Length: 288
Image 1 (cartoon, rainbow, N blue to C red):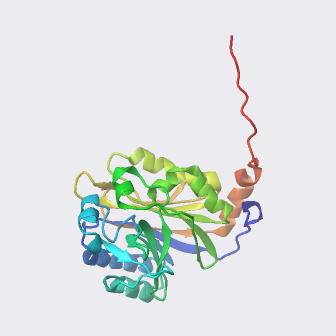
Image 2 (tube, helix red, strand yellow):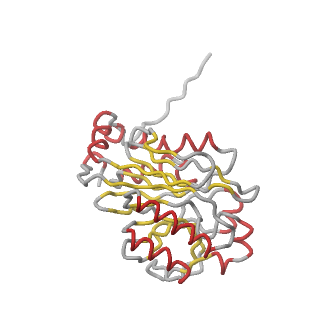
């Protein structure tokens, strides 16, 4: 669906993004934390909740490296995940009628290991929604295989592109979501202490670049040097924060997405339509 032809008509949708501390290697404990966050989102009226990158095992390379069996979830050929440790999360999504996007380490049937987003639907079914395409740094490159394609999630008529952390550092990734007709971009992430400036530039930029909502989740706390800086936020299509958490502490931020506002922004700031199909050949200027 080309963005110039994308005329979103769904009803307003309330969404949430969370930040919390995950304990390295403690899948059962991190699922319990996820359940608590799902319940908070449901109480706030959210139909969709985004949790951080690798939140189920925790983003902690030594634990991921030393205990792959304990930190991975297994996916079937069709991407379904049936892991008893996730049963409380399934029940919370079902009871709260909340779609949950949460980061996990996934072992596929061909033995690929990916840094992925799981989607827990309102019936409690769990599937692999997206495998991170842009791996960041030596640890991720050692641990994971990059994903080979993007993904779009549809919730109550709203189309969302899926990204994970470093993906959103590349404007082309968010643009690919917009080119697929996305009205929003969901980004489970893991930004470390010291990266506040970049964290607070990339996600508003992806919103403004593409005239779409951005939902950013991040972890907080954790053992050094894998200590995370929070700042979970929901950005409007002009890159303004609709709700935003502090750099520390557990939090759930909530906002309602409005298709009429998205249309207004895209009509006013028409970069998606005005973009040239190619930029021509660069001309070299020789100065004397």
